[in-house]
Structure formats: C-alpha cells, structure tokens
Length: 338
Ligand code: A2P
Ligand code: 11C
Image (tube, rainbow, N blue to C red; front, side, top):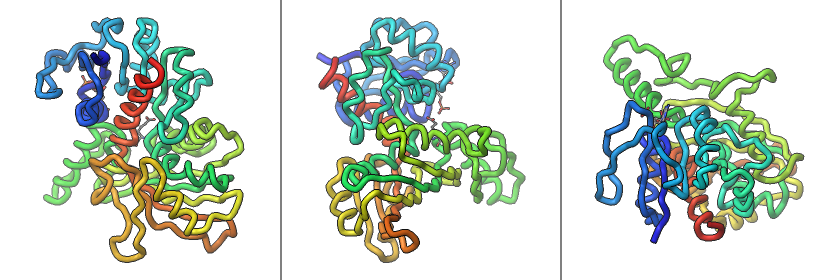
C-alpha cells in the first residue's frame, strides 16, 4: 500500500535523479507516472526493474497521483502545479516559481521540517535552490547555537545545475578544445570549459544575479529571520556534478573551532572532513558527486573579525540540492501529514 507519484520532467537531469532516489530509498510508490514534453512521450525509463512509458504532461490526469515532484522549469510549474493541486495531488516543486510566495512553504527537512504543514494552503511545497540548501544544512546548528548575523558566500557551481544541455556543452567543448578544434558556446554566454563565469541566472537591477538573490531571499525565509544578511557571488565552473561554497559567517556570539566541530559532527545530513593537510578536505568530484551528505571542511576562525568563522561546504547539487531534498520532503509529507 503506497502512494501514486508523478515525476514532471522525468527525462531531465533532476527528474532522472528523483526516480533513482525514489527507488534507492525504497519510497512507498504504488504507481509511478513519468511525465515530460510531447517530444519524449513513448520513451521508456526503468524503475524497480520495470519499464515505464513516458507520458506527455499535457495529457496527464493529476487526480491519479497523490504526490507530484515537479522539475521541468518555472513556466511549466506555473501552469501545471495549481492544476495538479486542484486535482488533489500535493506538489513538491523544484523550480523557483513559488518559492517567495508567503503562503507556500519552502523546506529543507534538516532545517525547517515544521514548515511542511503549510502545504494545506495551496497544495504546493517549494524546494529551495541547490546553493541555498547545502549552505543552510551546514549552518543550521551554528545558527541555533550562537546566532548568525551575516553570511558572505562565494559559490563554485557545477554545470548540471543548468540541465542536460549544459552537461553536454561542457563535455563537447572540452573534447573539441583538447583536439585543437574551435568550440562554440551556446548554453552559456562564454566558454565554460577551462573557465569560470561569474554569472548564474539573470542580472537584477541591483547588479546581483538572480541566483545570488535567491540565496538572500531563501535564507531569510527558511530561517524565518529577516534580519540575517547575505552577500553572495555565484560562479559557474567546469565541474559536472557538485557545488562548492566558500562561506564566511559573522555570528552573534563567538563560535570557536571546537564548538563548530562538535556541532557539525552531530548535525543531521552533514559529514565533516577537515584534516588540515593535503587532501584533508571535501571536493565535488572526490566526495560529493553521487552522494547524499553535505560535506564540510576548511573550518577556521576568521583572523580578520572577532566573531567571524569560515567553512567550505560541498554537496551534490542534483541530489541534496534538488532531487534528494524533494524526496525527503515527500517522505515527511506521507509520514506526518497525508
Ligand atoms: P523533455 O525531455 O521531453 O524535453 P533539463 O533541466 O535536464 O534540461 O530537463 C528538463 C525537463 O523538463 C525534461 O524532462 C523535459 O522534458 C521537461 N520539459 C521541458 N519542457 C516541457 C514541457 N513543455 N512539458 C513537459 N515537460 C517539459
Ligand atoms: C544552478 N542553482 O546551479 C541553479 C539551478 O532556482 O532551482 C537551480 C535553479 C533553481 O544553475
């Protein structure tokens, strides 16, 4: 006796990971509906040893599903999430479309699981942005113990955050350039192979990008703290899977290295790897890619500020940053609410 789950964007980078994680975590799925565009209708995907035919989203009757995991882009969610909710299917939406709506909960299960109860408002729960999720999983125990007033963060983000076409662009550009051929940039405005682009999502009037402002808005909403200030710079780098972040916090009370270690070693969803020697820190490729935890290293007290503290935070952006976090929300939803 399980629930019927619809995955919207089932052929995309995040949708594929959602289906894999539902299987890995043995989520109690009764029927799985794999939905994508008309272009993909009729293709098959594998789930628990069975073959499932992809259906055109536009033709799907959402009254057949109790939970909908959406990851097909903001405009698709804008149109279909309210329709699904009206048909009785609770939507867990991985796009940024509903995140800032006051009556839509924005949830990281390790940080604010209580907020899920707000799903009854509109039948929709929003999944935060990947770069926010991993940062807040690591900062939550520190926030609770000593308070955090300000966060300065620089991100180093993988191309999988953009989707399958970007994964393809990095692979193709790299191969062509190594073979001495010209390589066009199509998905990104400049060459991504062997480069770093200080630009993720669209530019805003204040000079920050939308990815950067998401880290501000979402941190305040999830911590339920309008006073916490965040100063982000988001950078795309030529890594396939795993976002890395250099995070510099200013706490309300002094945080010592010993306290930080003790807090993070006991924090749910966090693995500390901080050896202060060559290789004694987590990286996207060697630790995070394909794994569930948020990895933390390079912890040190800030020599430039009496209440400053530094951390290096790495996680798989497609898993904890998107698909895994959505499935964890679904697990709490069926356990405590539905
Ligand atoms: P499709 O493969 O049929 O285009 P990614 O973020 O990796 O690029 O994936 C985007 C996902 O969103 C894919 O599963 C894609 O399906 C899906 N998608 C894109 N446009 C639509 C649409 N108009 N209707 C339904 N699904 C869509
Ligand atoms: C990236 N963070 O790495 C983006 C992807 O708001 O859900 C997710 C965008 C979002 O490009």
